[in-house]
Amino acid sequence: MAVVVRGARMLLAHTPGLVRHGSKPARELARDPALLDRLAARLRPYAAAAAYPPNRVFLGALSPDALAALPRPWFEAAGPEDVRGPHGFLVPEETFYGFLKADDEFDLIWLDEGFVAEIRDALIRHPLTVPEDLARVGEGKPASAIRGRLETDDALPLTLRDGRLIGCVGRAHEEDASLAADILLENLATKSAAVLALRTLITDGLAEAATIPYVINSGEEAVGDRYQRGGGNLAKAIAERCACREASGADVKAFCCGPVHAFVTAAALVEAGVFEQVAIVGGCSLAKLGMKFQGHLAKGHPIIEDALAGFAALVGRDDGRSPILRLDAIGRHSVGAGGAQQAILEALTVKPLERIALRLRDVDRYATELHNPEATEPAGSGNVPLLNYRLLAALAVARGEIPREGLGDFVARHGMPGFAPTQGHVASAVPFLAHAVDGLTQGTMQRVMFLAKGSLFLGRMTQMSDGLSFILERNSRLTTEPEDRSS
Amino acid sequence: MMLKGKKILAIGERDGVPGPAIARCAQQAGAEVVLEMTHCFV
Image 1 (cartoon, rainbow over the protein chains, first blue to last red):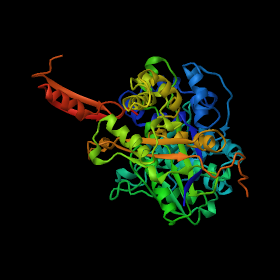
Image 2 (image 1 turned 90 degrees about the horizontal axis):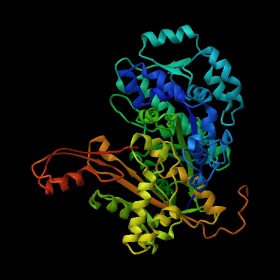
Image 3 (image 1 turned 180 degrees about the vertical axis):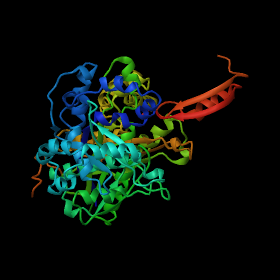
């Protein structure tokens, strides 16, 4: 029995007010509080984030090829201010704070009562709001209560882009560092981003909440307490908020290649008949907001890393239409493979392709590290996707698949520009998922490879990297006329 | 560049050359590696 990816949806929350709580800005602001004014002056308004071409690609309103054709800097491009694209929503920060409160089970978030009154209509109108969200947001707290909590409770302020204080997040324990306000804000933001992505998948008719038996979360958060840091299972908390009443779940952790591991695990569970379908989710990385802000300030650019990201997808049994996940061609970077880039790429691309008698150029597109270069280049971190695609093309040259002078053409034909926010695991391969499903069902693509790498060495338990890949292939039963999904 | 007898900080990159590979090359050239590290810049 074949396993397919039924669909995928993405989520962006434009949260310039939360940039100050990103790991790098928070550390720099603690050293130099006067930096806040310079940082705030370069935060983009919602309209600019909505028109930003990489965000539009992330949400499916623009193709990666169209982005490649646009002149840089992309942040100067004018464009429609879409609230949502075909693949997902761009949620404004005011509304996102409302969702954050709705997902809060322990009264961690306090929102100002005046602010709650202001956002109520927007929350009611938002297509991802469910009726119980409004009751959970409640009436808010008096401004004096919020100020009092900030003064006495190690709470963190919640502000809008313009610096206006609209609430706070408190700690959940006096001594437990795993339950401090900053950690809880990170975890709650991850939960909300994943909830909104999964709700999009459901409201778009790509999944039915009541029939999802298992959810795998692949985010980078570490939910737990002092006795079990990273104890996890945010998956089940996300399922609960998406009305997946029959679902259980678990988290799969593997740094940035967590999502690819999650897809392989989910596909194996479906193939083995354990579950008929499995939802895969990944929430945001609040810690990475403003990660490269110093480079942006130095170059006079806007702070590009001002959005939180999430995704959700459904893996299920072959429906005769959706792209097949080739379980016979999983690429893995093994312990013994070595740490050189060539060794990693060979393990992830050449070896699985050889197993099914294919060559590198038989794959239409490679979805690898898709970080937006406008986020990374001003900070001296280079163009990560281009670096990876050049290496892949060099591998094709070394194997005699293409001539040396065909290297640039291979990059253009099989690669794509980076368009994902630097949100860790979310930027690794998965931003192309919904584009791939479209191209493999409604377009002319035959095969897409998703490959991701994980920086295991960052946790100081090994010097190794990690990597995993899978191939999505056009369903051989797919007729030229797409089937009616409702039947 | 002659590395023999020099002290080396080998700082590698996840999407480029990893730290241990730089360190091994430097050691082969006679350098003393005093720090070996790989960073991820995304």
